Length: 556
Image (cartoon, rainbow, N blue to C red; front, top):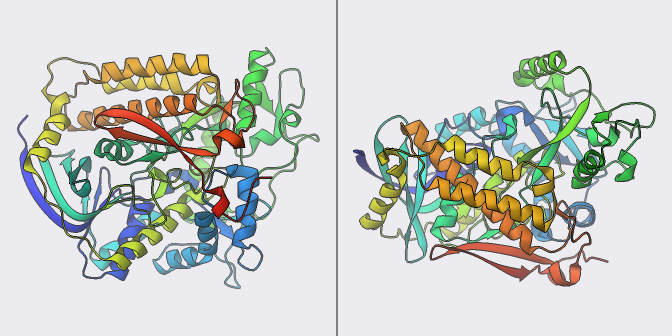
């Protein structure tokens, strides 16, 4: 294929124009006004990502009532199962109100009451939620533009460029024109979102292609097995039912919530998915919700829709369409994913110099949430707030250390990446991205494969992924948009293979991670992180002991 070669230079390249990437760009320019910051986004920065797709909630900790150590202890015991980085969790809690104040300063509409306090709704023993307007990312982009951040929309990262183990830029391509870019940068920040397997519509913007580029470059991934989030949805409309697990009944009219839930939890647990699977397997389905007298206590607090004017019409239409389709409250789990495994340290730098990762692409890789998938991660509102938190921490670290020397870009490396990139357009025949994606979804979507797992079922699912991997070598694209789909399909295959191989290694149940054949938590042998890495083209795994002795909260 003929394409135009373009060479670009910047100080800091940010890949991804969602809430994390935009927040990092603004914070960097506020700290380093003279830095040349370039954001590339495969769709349109300010409209991509998940923050503006219907979630629109921010986690809130009352600084007068919640001490970071107390929440870290609660989270380790009730959610993260001691696999989480307690130091980072405490820093996240401590910075919470400051992050909200920062967003307000950038022009984001964070609703407040007449007395100036934030308009919050309690959601748990420590946390509350604030409904932020769905134009949050647009407002942060406008702030970034005012500070001089450069943007290239409809531009996709193909691969990262390296020099002696240091990331020194990347190659990218336009999905509108035949333009190929070699971008030289002193630092590269990945803000590309998680892998969500394109099953749930609201979540499907997470394509995992940034993670795939990081993996190909040789950086480490962590906690790839904790990318298996699922949510209860209405069977007919697929509308999400938040906290529906509190009110589950089988076809016999039996209240089955009591089989797995003794008290109201912060968010859905994988035990609810297991119960649904066991009821269906026993022939007691379908499962319905009933908000009757046996049901667990529901939400409470003041309605929050009225303080989200930008999203009000969207939610009204969504509820109306759901009501037209649904005639009852039959529910089933819908697999979402939320694999977010790029490993980072406390400064958000990956295992490779010059490469950082923030937000949903690195949430489990940061180890902040512990043994649970990325946001919502059993903490509603942590998705947006974690992305902004990571963005601010990353910007602070880069500003304090200064920009490193720029590495040397090898032209041969860039040409090899272009050859790999455009290969689907060169093939005369081949399979479609949809065919590959369908195979991966067939492997990942069943709850008994990915949430309530067992070795024989995972091995069978892995065989499907191997078929998809073999098929992906023949991917064919008709145009540049199809080329993007091919690369996203390749990323999905990689994510699924990483998930199943790591899940087969972890021989225990911990937090969200459930194995039918290893039902107990094993702190003696599996208080460990699983690290995945591409070493000379081979997928490798090793374990590291969680440094639990250096943290304040210990397992009993």
